[in-house]
Amino acid sequence: MSLKKIVAQKILNDVIKSVYKRGEWKVMVVDSLSMRMISSCCKMTDLNNEGVTIVEDISKNREPITNLEAIYLINPTEETIDFLIEDFTDALHQKYKAAHIFFTEACPDELFNKLCKKPCVRKATKTAKEINIAFLPYESNVFSLDRADIFNVAFSPVSTKESRMKPFESVAAQIATLCATLGEFPHIRHRVDSAGICAEVAQQVSDLLRKYKADDPSMGEGPEKGKTQLIILDRGFDPVSPLLHELTFQAMAYDLLNIENDVYSYEASSSSGDYSVKEVWLNENDDCWVALRHKHIAQVTKEVTKLFKEFSANKKINTGSGEKTTVKDLSAALKKMPQYQKELSKYGTHMALAEDCMKHFTGRADKLCRVEQDLAMGTDSNGERIKDHMKNVVPILLDNTVSTSDKIRIILLYIHSKLVSTDEGISTENLDKLIQHASIPANESGIIHNLTNLGIPVVSDAAGQQGVKKKYKHPDRKNRVDENTFQLSRWTPYVKDIMEDAINDQLDQRQFPFIDGKGPMGGGGGAKSARYGHWHKDKKDVGHSGPRLIVFILGGVCYSETRCAYEVTEAVKQSKKFEVVIGSTHILTPDLFLKGLRDLNSS
Image 1 (tube, rainbow, N blue to C red):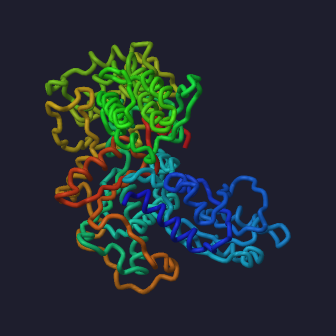
Image 2: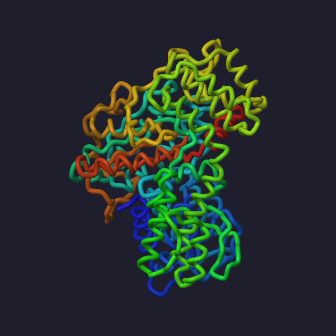
Image 3: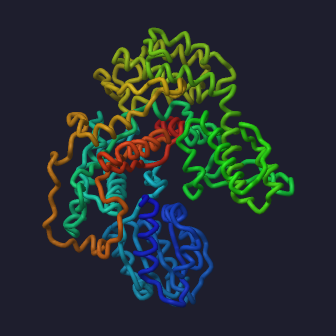
């Protein structure tokens, strides 16, 4: 069972059905994370079938519906508690008939006491529970905490252990709810980073899970569940993957196109021949998207054509198209068979998306990809070591048609290539020349210098500069290039090596130590926890009977890395029976990565 289905089951069973009464409708009130959580894994019809008539945002102005009870699914923060209190100011001005309150994570005592001190709230409340599900199930094997702000918290030049403590407590609580939702009590390990931030989060998660285990000794039990691991990484472990122009469908689309909140907009024709702007949500409800998202763009058009022809043959539609199907072919088929509009539109969407990607690739990214891959790999497409990258880099920096952000990506990749080959960054003088060649504005050049805050030395002669002063240690990488590798896609994200090594018990324990040694964590025989209640009672199916590898990246996960979770899961599902789940504080695109680096200046 996928992560999204597990979360949907928990929302429907542990929240909505737990207060359901036949013949009674209820209002559902949510905050921004809960809204995204529900939208990603539940349909409105699912909620309607369980008596929910409307879903409303707690932060928005809402009309009173005094004849209906409300189900609150909220993160316990000062803001949401204040909104909740405001809904029940007094008996004459309350918004709903009664309140069923479900907190997505443990409610701090001071906030819970603040709520209890309000007589009208206390009188109106019929239910108050902590359900521990404070994360966004983004895909079947991918989760997000929806906390992009943590990038600044973790990597700001003025960040300290004290300033990080509270935000990291919140992050740890969200990760702990993920483990609880999956029914896992993992061995926790972390990357050894220069600032110690991975260890800080790992220790806090460990402390929380021990409390969960004290409440539910059966947590993490099952066939081979003792092998389950949680690995905490930070974005500095691999600065290359978020910078490259990826050519697999999902990563390429989110990099080159203006896709916001997973919605792709394009011009489409109807069965009548009229054109209009169509908006499509790219998610797992579309089986065509699931089949295509991790394929190389060179394969996508062929695959859409194949799927379209199979559908057409099954429905006996004469397409008249040749080897390659185009958007025009799909439009023509739609006019012939309007009754299949939903199915044909699906193929049309992905054909339009692929053509849109190629339009942006040709003339822009195509000239960058070869140089980027050479910089990332340190070798050319023939496997020959490149001694001087500058002859390939400088023409791009001088090209006025290349955007500033693409030039910055090239410079950062060049700096990393120098680190790998010499263990040191470049000189300040050489960096200034690169910035000058590229005509990068002063307010953008900070992006380059701020990579240092991720533990990656940018310049080798910066006396007193914050960051790593000792030589840069880069990991030994697996050679995955063979005759089937696309030459513009030779790089494999480092996280795939980590996943495989962890599953095969080959991950270096000096670089990725366990929090409590390698043995099982304690806490199984402790007393019941009053703080954490009985959230585990009547536990439902958690979807996977074997062990899991959960990878969490502090500071953003990119689409090429999420793809690795599916690839490794598929590769080991028969032999090792592991399922890999990957997540982060937020989902990262190259533009968001550069924005995060830029904003470190304003922390």
